[in-house]
Length: 116
Length: 114
Image (cartoon, rainbow over all chains, first blue to last red; front, top):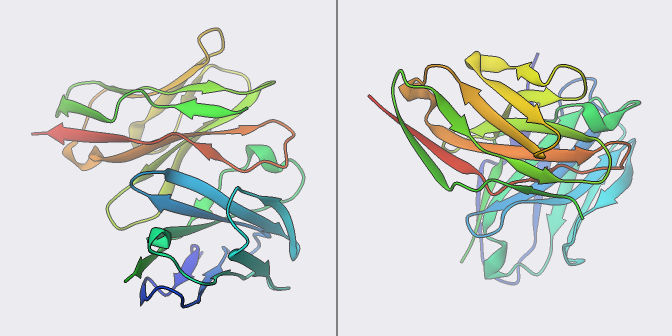
């Protein structure tokens, strides 16, 4: 069974640009979450989608947005990029039915975004 | 507010010795607890979880974790460390019944020397 796939693996952008990252969950998984990982702040939750609806949102500015498609694939978008947005962005999927709280999330290898 | 603490930034052990990576949590109600491992340039891999029941949970790669409700701890253990266990380890909590994102600790770098 294929794991969580994130594309691209590496991305270099400049300040002020925007970027779109993609995540394909494990087949059959309907819940997709996004996390930002930086050396200083660690792993921080961005948002979670289930059945094309945002179910939960972390404490990030409105420049960070996401969506989920009917096939459960998800994208996140960051507009007006800032230097501080340089990070590893991780996507995780889980089955997302019934008691979501006790389901482990399965992570992709991430997209490393560098802002120049 | 829910939180997870991993008091050690780094743990060093010799190969063949037992290892412990510490985690304490703060959450209202009964928690769901997880351990993940991250190798360089990779995502997080699920190791084990505690839901309910037996306080000793067994997971992947010979790892286990002990849940202690009175001490609000969920320490990761392995009886005999391998050099290949060297990685970054994250403890995480998700509140029961919450809409709940995972809340991660800062991570502990485990270094196993031959």
